Image 1 (cartoon, rainbow, N blue to C red):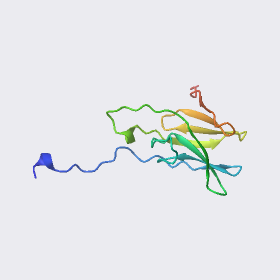
Image 2 (cartoon, rainbow, N blue to C red):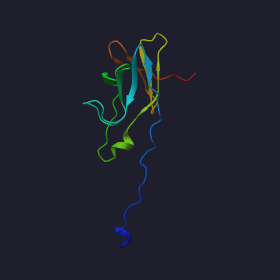
Image 3 (cartoon, helix red, strand yellow):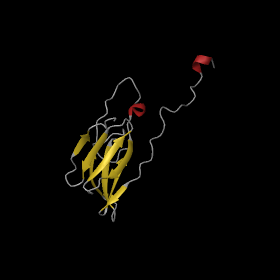
Image 4 (spheres, rainbow, N blue to C red):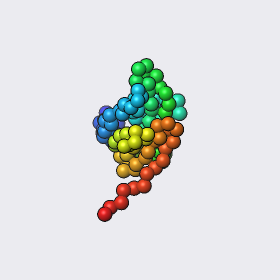
Length: 122
């Protein structure tokens, strides 16, 4: 076998996403979905799913943010996952930050998503 025909050594395209623990509130578990758990979802880590704690049944899912796709690049290197997720002080929204530093609030009652302004440096 010539050097040009030798198989390429496997290489990692990106580091695995940080483990962001689910948030449990009022009998519902909220977690980032990685993989294709929702019919409309792709595998780019930008979806949130809500599950009934007692039954494990999917209650709803929502896309938290868009990520542009560049056709010439592998999809896995373009994925942007959650970096953190927590319940707000009022217990009415989940606050989610992604790996690129963008921040979002997902209202638990309506499932509405809004991007929060970037933190300003003092």
